[in-house]
Amino acid sequence: MSLTPGPDGYTPSARQRERIAYRRRQSVRSVAIAAVSTLVLGVALMLGVTGSPGWQRVRESFLDASVARAALPSVLSGLWLNLRLLVFCAVGALALGLGIALLRTLRPAVFFPLRALATSYTYVFRGAPLIIVLYVMTFGVPGLRLSGTPSVLVLGGIALVLVYGAYLAEVFRAGIESVHPSQWAAARSLGLTYRQTLRHVVLPQAVRRVAPPMLNDLVAMQKDVGLISLAGPVDAIRAAQIVTAETYDFTPYIVAGVLFVLLAVPLVAITDRITVRAARRQGAV
Amino acid sequence: MTPVLACDSVRKVFHGNVVLDDVSLTVDEGEAVVLIGASGSGKSTLLRCVNLLETVDDGTIHLDGRDITDPRVNADEVRRNIGVVFQSYNLFPHLTVLDNITLALRRVHKRRRRDAEQHARRVLDQVGLADRAGAYPDRLSGGQQQRVAIARALASYPRLLLLDEVTSALDPELVGEVLALVHELKGMGITMVIATHEMGFAREVADRVCFLDAGRILESGPPAELFDAPREERTRRFLARVSARG
Image 1 (cartoon, rainbow over the protein chains, first blue to last red):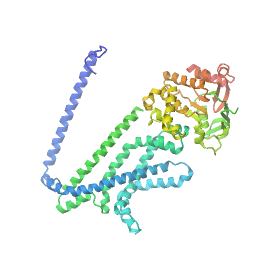
Image 2: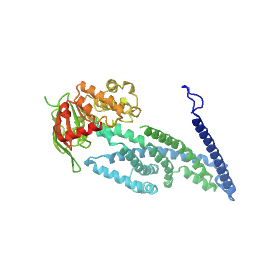
Image 3: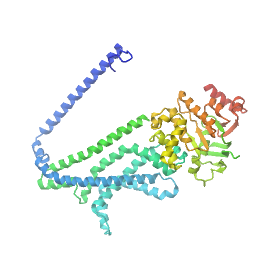
Image 4: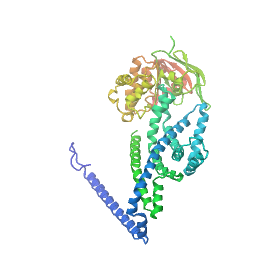
């Protein structure tokens, strides 16, 4: 609200002017308080960490620039594996999750076995720890000595897809069930079949609604793809570990950690943007 | 001439509650039949049974002489010939006004996109919303949304149009525009079954009014007769109650 007269010749009353002035003073005050408290906290943290008795040693063994430079190439090539694996697993888990969620919505009795299978899958793989699934897939399955067994990398990827697919299936299912039954009624009454209704009316609304939790699961997955290194392949963290073992310096871990965060930033930013947009759209409805 | 709709001794039970009890009703081509009655008297359930959103527990419903309560009929095919407008509009929020109308034309009636869009624009023009074709439903007022819902139901030339309390969710000042549109439909000779609480509107638009009470059609007749000289005591009491309220 401005203090100058509007186009209609309106000038705020003395009471309104007083309110505006008060609100302005309040906001200046809260900005000042926030600035001071941030500064105090920052200085305290810095003094606390750098002033600690072991700071010199920690700095040498965790933040050594020369070790970081030396480790960067191998950590980066490990990260490249993480990235490829992430793309493969994300696509796989999304497809599997959607498929399972759709199976669970099928009502006709003939589909009972499929539905039961889909349900038990989500129960088992949401409960099973990822590491154990990974071991079973990467050590157990090759142990069968079947011809055409894929590489450990693919098997590990499948383990990740299986576990994350179960979570994503539940996310998709929640989305499908959140679409109001009246949408089904409207679509079916227009003559759309069950499949057409699902495809053109229910799923587009469901996916939009669950996009934030779905992307959140993918952000979590980005960190877990590295666990595949337990089975042999060298990912970024494993590469960092190797360099650490050679130099007795932990800096490579910090390098890998920073790279992971940098990798996550765009995904997290997209998630936040979509969440805000979804909230705005829902608020407008 | 075979009536467009013929319900014969329809019965529907929900969890032991008899919601429709021996309901018989015929609707001829071009006729507008209005169902009145208190909430829970079975008006909406009857419409949902006609549209096969509910299966009847006894009796038959014929659409153009064909028994649609036979479990062997293809429900999707039957619904293609019946348009429904709901109390809460039920537009698809993720689609524009135009796409709301073309969805069924393209997917169910297999019309090409351009053809479907041209037709949809014509229908939108009829309901006076040609300029809102590109808008999303949440940008429209309740009355406009309901007019889009009517356009969507009309676009595929249904044999029968079911209107389920289409003004009940609207603000009072928006009721008029929707009722005026239904009047126009009546003028176009569209066969309709209308469930409503608007007695003045029922009187104007109906060829025949049916009073439902506890799942039965207690009384039916031309509006002048039913409103001005009801035979049944319950009808009189219902009419007195709603006129006192309105």
